[in-house]
Length: 100
Image 1 (tube, rainbow, N blue to C red):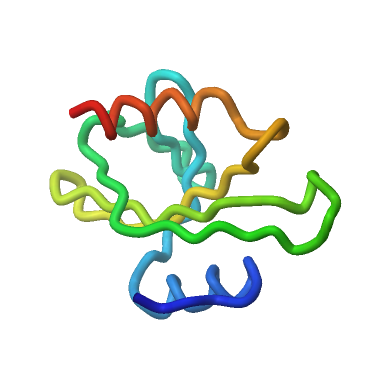
Image 2: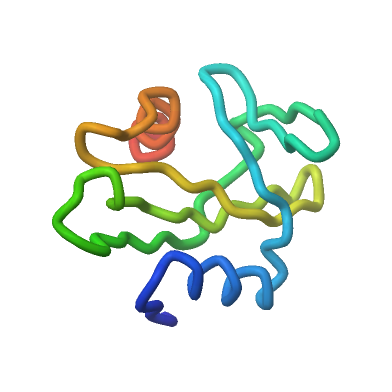
């Protein structure tokens, strides 16, 4: 698996691998903010993820997820903070994926 030194390197590397969509997530769906399309969360899977602690500032700690959906023929990224700044809806979705 590829290792990246910064979040920006990971974004560029994953885009080169075909993860071109930039997704947002809420409690009920995955959304593409460029097109406003909404997709069923259960149709996506996490292909890989990378965690970054770029300095001692908690606001600069993040995880990037490479996600894909065979159903919708989409590949993209989802970025979430970790620790105290983590997005709760993303964490809930990840918990569901790990329990299935």
